[in-house]
Image (cartoon, rainbow, N blue to C red):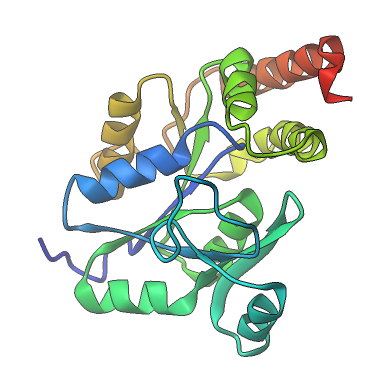
Length: 220
C-alpha cells in the first residue's frame, strides 16, 4: 500500500536496552508493506542471530567516521561504547515510496530526528516491570559485566526522557504493543496519549532498577 508522503514519514521507537522495541519494529514491517525498517550503521560486532545489511550495517570505526565527514547520517550517537547512526538514504527512499520509515534508535538519536523531521512521531517503549527489564538484559548473554553495567545505568537515565516523547507504549504484550504503535502511525491513536500515572510509573521503575542492581553484586 502506498501512502501520502505528506503524512508522518518516520516512526521513531526508543527504549532502554532489552525492552523490545526491535521486536515491535520487526512486527510492524512484517505486518504490511507500508512500513519499512531503517537499517542503522553501527561499529559494534554482530551478535550470533544478526545479519549484516538486515539488522544493522556493521562498519569499522573509520568507516563510520567517513560517513560522518560526508554528512551521510541523519542522526548518530554513541551508545554503550559503540557508534550508531541512521543513513540519510533510508529516509529519502521511504519518502520516494510514500511509506513509513520505522526507526529503532536510542533517545539521543530520537531527539536529533525531532529537530530534523518535523512530522516524525516519537514513541517511547516502557517495560512492564524492572524485573522483566533486568532479566531481558541479562538474558542477552553477549556482553561482559562492564557492558551490562553501562546498560543498567543507561536504562535508568533513559527512563527520564519518556515524557519528552509524543507517545508512550508499555510492552507487556507484544501484539498489543504493535497494535498501539500501528494505530499511532496511521493516526488512530489520541494525540499525546500517555498513561495518567506515567511520572509515578517511571519513578517506580527507576527505583526498582536501583534496588535490583544494588542487591545483585554479580555485576560489580
